Length: 135
Length: 130
Image (cartoon, rainbow over the protein chains, first blue to last red):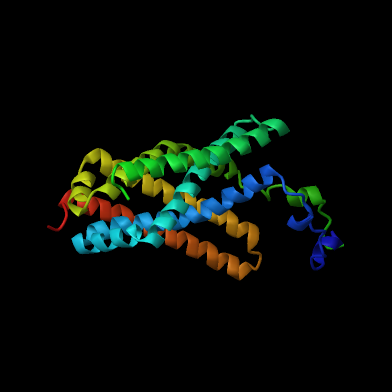
């Protein structure tokens, strides 16, 4: 028990990012966090939408003008990428939580699929947006 | 020797408060609910982006749209509060900073979620300002 009473000792640190060779499952994991944080901002934009709608026509027009501006569209494009990535990779995590898909080949293939799905779904939504007058 | 208790005796009753499984399952249930809700949300954004204020007021007054939008925003804020909480816990190791950021995360999500839901209810029940 005498050890526990002393001040905490220096603990060994786990190997850090710099010594790992990049692999696709690692990139997927990091991207999941990054897109999650991006979508946090996206949800705050959605809250601003609801607030502007409740505030009246002028506030709503301002909100739409900001999001329809070139910078706003870049942000919306980034959010579309983030959303489809986080959606697909979230489902991948749910499959893992259910106990499936841990084999190396399966995990790598799922990563590739998630990135491919993100690209395809993002392009599809923006094509639909352009065709339906949403831009 | 500070104590005659064995390490095992000290550890018993500490550690898990037996609530971890509930929290874990809750995170998954919210994530599963968000799959259909967010896909509907993409459809909603496309409709709303193509319309003006009158359209949006009319659209949100429909019970199905209002309820789905409230569920989407409410569960999203819940989910992202838990998500950023884990990020903060993983990367911030100064106790005071960590507590401050965890509180800020909770308050931002709570405020934004409450504002969103109240705003939607206001427009859905009261109609817009014409």
